[in-house]
Length: 472
Ligand code: GDP
Ligand code: GDP
Image (cartoon, rainbow, N blue to C red; front, side, top):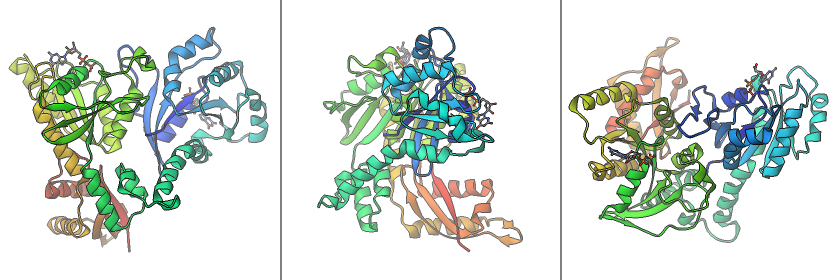
């Protein structure tokens, strides 16, 4: 499961600056959903081999009266949902009573918490930090978010337990307890890639993975019809629903089968939510949605035909695209719409979603069941595309054909030459192309290659990532 890191601290300590550093973007998902506390930002970050979700809990102003309530409102849910808390303070401003109030609150939460003294650029960090020990923390880090100083070291430490856990599992599986690494131990593409298997073993591991149930997450903003769709799917006569195994603190995983294909439906709508879950307070949880995306093979993004495509729809879509998961889009509530409305919706989709040309779009009515059965075809297609094994020779041949049809440009008086290609990962498929000066290829040629691969390999439903390796 992808770790979640919450940034906490009074205003102006540098949370947004650190958030932007980590996510390298300004278009974060802002939790501006109906019924949800505003002022929280969610981003997806990749650093070295770590992937994680960052929450900027926004304006906790500890100086106000009733900081406890304020914090409870603003960021308690975020802290609850986080695996690690980074508590930021301002090394230039020194310790404030607001910091102390927040520290007190955090101590009662018992979350792994790192104290981060920011803005140590141009000052003596050790002097600046000394007084913060009073906050009673286990570990303190000095950073300058604007200079990107200390940020990597901080994140390495904060995230170490999560990669250690995976490595330990892999090591245990890898025969360090006398056993052999068995294919059963490798339950995700990421595991297989980290396990450094021989070509033959990797092949077998991927084959086995392809026979696994398809993990399918139904996501979308509130009221688009996720619960209705989930109930429709689970109630369908052709669907066999199994007992739910184990418990997780996140979405409920519902194993099911249809036409001989096994699925695990990740229920973010809380249709089958257990009682006594803290999440019940908020019907919609951004973090739960983001985690479901990460854990899914295929994401079914539900959009409401009766509402304009909103920034939230696009933010969720952005998350799916960044995660590299396969995608099927369902435009719901298609029942009873006039033809001119339907035309208008379709042209808006073209305009705003035209850039996700790889995803199939279905027009459905979860309420009446219309079109729901056809979703499976696209889900299966997307999954197969995302996990398809493609040989080096085929990838190289397609690359060659693309190059023959349309030569790469000249750069600094020399023609860029593509030499060979091989697979670098699956779900999403990664194609690694070796050649000279390839890092200087313009975006247009990269897109041309991607589309060429997509057409040649008939890959629908999944993004394709191309990486370039210079070899002179
Ligand atoms: P937030 O309210 O906690 O999100 O704080 P911001 O990220 O908006 O930062 C508040 C101010 O501190 C901005 O003017 C930043 O440019 C500045 N700031 C943030 N990080 C640093 C840093 O590492 N060094 C210095 N000198 N200023 C910083
Ligand atoms: P969720 O918040 O995404 O889980 O949305 P719900 O499944 O609770 O649906 C929100 C509202 O939209 C409810 O009133 C549903 O009855 C209605 N709804 C859901 N699907 C459809 C549909 O296909 N057509 C119509 N007309 N209404 C729908």
